[in-house]
Amino acid sequence: MPKISKTKQLQIVAHHEAGHAVVDLAFGRTPHSITIKPRGDTLGLCSGEDNLIGDITNGDLEPMLVSLYAGRAAADHFAPEEAEANALGASGDDEAAARLLRFWVGDTGQAEIDCRARAAEIVRERWAAVEAIAAALLERTRIDGLEADLLADMAEGRIAPEQLADWRHFMGLPQSSRHRVPSGWVDIEFVAPDDGNA
Image (spheres, rainbow, N blue to C red):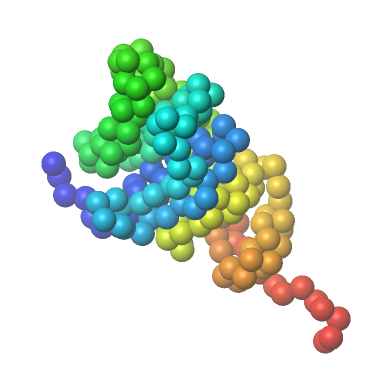
């Protein structure tokens, strides 16, 4: 396998984790947090609800499977030339999905094919949101699910950049940032609201 630069690997991991987050959001499941800070054997993590297999309902299964496959779908969309590395990076997700499928369906056949296709479809349709979340991860290494949701909304034109700026100021986040919006990239300079004491 050809060696990948650290920068490229970090970009792939950011897109991988952003793919999980965007699919979770598409199914109405806001992640708790998304990070590209390595921990143990993982290079990143999109954490959501921790369901034990016995606690999963039929309604949980498709969103969980599609989300598990979305990391690789996003990595492949971002860096198709690194397909082998992307597959290796998604091996833990693939193993988790296979366990779920065996428990619920009994095999991994058509259900796996369908869920992988759905993951790739959502990633393609919501690529601007994937890029916006990945850019924020590359900037700060960790974001919470609410910010991911706002970034996706801004990237897809549902909210204005100023609304994100107000939220970031309220949360005490950095005073400048660069984000992808439907018309291109926008640099946001955050200015503290006038409290009337000037």
